[in-house]
Length: 132
Image (cartoon, rainbow, N blue to C red):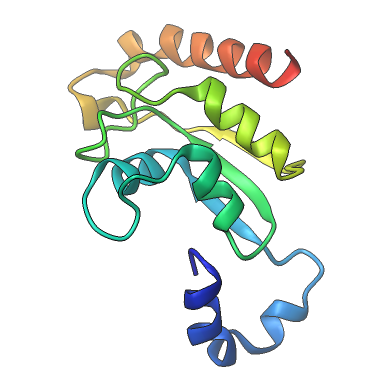
């Protein structure tokens, strides 16, 4: 559930899962960007708005870049995601979970040999943003 309204709708189906101390949300930042870039329900929200509206604690984030149109799973800088804003929003909600750099070369017309160094750069960028 991506907000309190959806959580209320699905609560009875989630049952005892919601009582687990490790229960929370995995946020895929690339998917978030597609929602924020598209029309409809999420249009016009900022990254901070998106994270603040989540109805449960975020326990993991998947980090990859895209242009907001399709799931490109690119290295940082491939698309239009502002990872500085993502880091600020996660810090603001008290995130202390797992961050996964999630790059799939074939999704954006690359190959593993070309993507490996950029994946490492993405990791270093994320570490600097998180620690800065």
